[in-house]
Picture 1: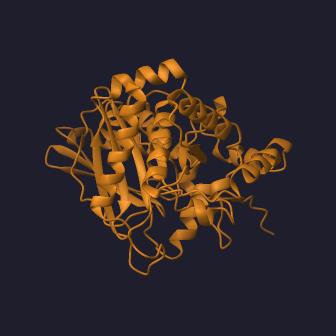
Picture 2: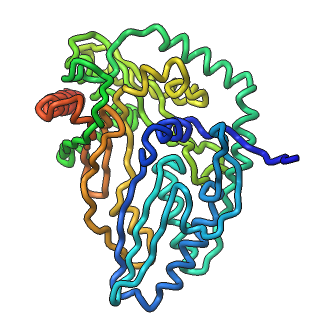
Length: 377
């Protein structure tokens, strides 16, 4: 008899897995790196990647017929069902082609893997990733009173609201048999960055909260309503033992706002919304049926791990090679916060099947309008 222990996938991983049954390559991303002049050290580079990847159990998972996952030995840890790390010499350079499915982990996970590669390359020890222990605790927690209370609070707060969660789409129908084409619009906020940070420090409102507020107000104005809602990506990993876990531990948290001409009232409303959202985020409300039918198509505000900043962790001079633009949209509209040491940008990744370019530009203009009003009022 097989006594293999299996666990349901984490909420976002489950969403990706369900989508992959219809679209096998969904949420599969790729990038290519070059390390000039390092061909003589290719074996050391390969071994460092093997060590770093092997340190994270999710790379060795398998999924059964129910969609539950379990640990399984891998012949070559660099290549799996949901990932590939192809490392080759090209003249004097080393090239690394990465294929990675979002089912494995979130943005923070990439930071963790980069740090582990850097330590492995330098011969330093790695902190363990107790992913399966986390999964056992996560499943047990579903029976905890606080988990139940969070579900009740979120349901009471959001189940009956009828406010818009995205700008009105340009297509007459949300659902279409056409493949959703990707579009992108970028807005530079570097000029506003010092003032935004100053506001955040003064009012104890994070930059994520600031842009959630601006985006929600923009949705309300765009749709001609007094209220609006969206979701935002909370990193999670609150316990010390979760800090080194590669997995989809992030949480999509609902957020709503009511329009007001009182700047301080709006900031207070946003701050309270962010805090109460986090306090109840252990229940995956926006990814749970029947609520997911609404929130899967909401605007999502998220902070993106910057690739150039990530490469600074590596002890080698890695370069990010140009990659072709995404062809398929994975969401109706994501508002991505890209922050570097001396720059701040918002990237609007949207479905060009549902939105015209001029509509997204108009919406981005409303977001900037509220950002400037909040910092200048």
